[in-house]
Length: 511
Image 1 (cartoon, rainbow, N blue to C red):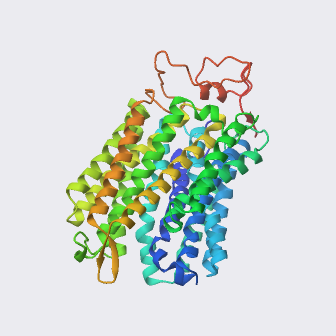
Image 2: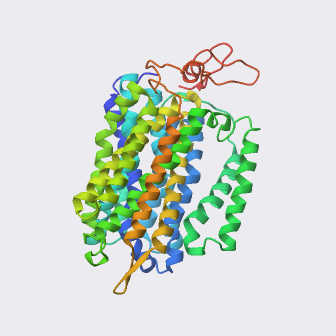
Image 3: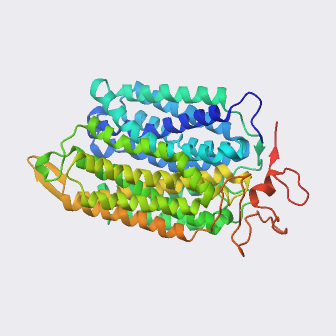
């Protein structure tokens, strides 16, 4: 569907990318106050950690839900709802210091993460093919770039103002994103309709909570504690049962038949690896930059200065987004993912060899961020070249969930390594140099796993509708196979873009 008259592709892209940036920044804006959270909310350290954990759980649960609702009732509508939830959550946190209310506010903030996959799906529906690749790459880059920019911004606010101002900033930027979305972004008329899968939401929510909660809290509870092991066991039971039930639902929350297609499955698995590898930079490099020189490796920077150093990598993700689009358009998302993983591995190897000067760390972090940026930008293209138009938001939301699982795993694994490998410096306990090097090696292994998975992706010359696309010889096309019907001879997105085509009903269009 073309853009309505008077709507510019560049303006729509900028409005969507700004909203994506705002949502990403929200997560790292609070990093500077994490050590002081127990005092700020008058709670124990374990209870105060729910301020962070609640956002993680909410984002994991709500992202696939918002994607499915976007496919059913309108992607722009769900973007508006998600941004509104973020504004309300930010306002709650800005107006109170009571732990239960702050946790509630952070939970509502976490519900906004679906804005990025929803925005990517809107771009697919509305933008011309010539602009779609670069626009999707830019939107994807906001996942990491926003977080990198949010760190120094949060440090400045935390240093010179009351901590509630952080949430006022978040609320204000959320309002700006909301206004820009309403004023500049048209809605796509594509709707799938159908009945919402409430049972699927309940099952997925229960399974994800049982999986992610012990990953997040295992270091505090103990990895062999009955609670941690019990939750993991519950996840091992609930998630397969949920999958079995989803295969028997007419309008599932997640179409598992689509997610098991080779291209979608491998991309989602690679997303876990890329999420792990990218988050390694956030866990290791800031500690190197901020640790005192007496630690044997630290460079003694302030939180703000360290944040500025890390922001360079975030900026590189934005700069490389058009490069990623060109590579993907010319050679396919497979090649882009492989190049991104190679860069990430190179960045971690650089850090292992050079970590004695600030510019060493900045160089290594920037190389890793560049690789993650290429990978993040290629993933939506890979996903959307293999799913029908009626499922783009849900498929992108599920892919975003896979990245979240990767970052959660990185937090747990690397956090456990750094907690086990420590040195004493006066009254402070710091990660040892050996522990940091082990963390770098683990992150490099994760990036290598992402590269290996990408090698097995099918080769496509283009990854967005309207561009010339070649299917691998002998590979079945990606048309959606409906019960009792043969697959369409067209690619899945092309077949389903035509509403009312005889024999292959497309998504319902509403004006």
